[in-house]
Image 1 (cartoon, rainbow, N blue to C red):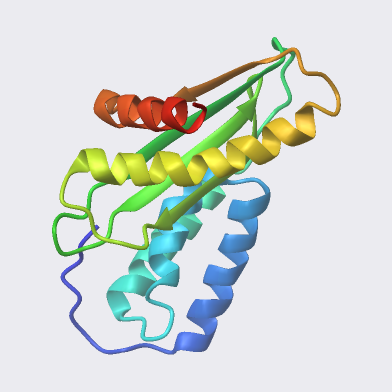
Image 2: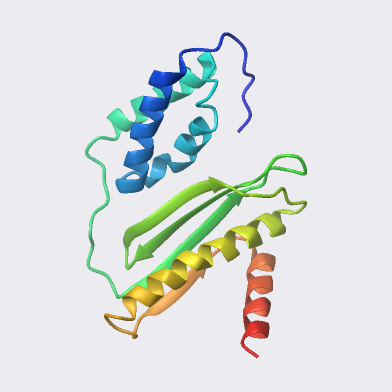
Length: 174
């Protein structure tokens, strides 16, 4: 996301307070806000008027979606991880997002800027997948204390990245 940031710098303390409250909600119950809150947090040291407008839009969305939420649904016992990324190009770092579901219920989610710039979308997707498999391994370790009979699936929209990940995993298992 790129904004044409013009205008004066505004008071940072109340901006940081609201962004912090939204970050708490993202971690507890609002994975749909993860990208927007992550983006706003990057500008919390020197927020401009345009950032306040974006923050106001996010708070408005939150108020409009009051009553929507995460529900526990009966479903087959399975662990599913969805991964996606937004390619930042050759200069900017890409943004990764993921959601981990137990059955149909989200149990872990996040959005963060990748630590390095990548030249290809396959690279950014692979970086996201390799980082997110750590969350999957932790969840598997916890769930195997209950049962070891459950399906594990990773969903990704970049088949080249999936194949690279599979090839690397099979090579490490040799």
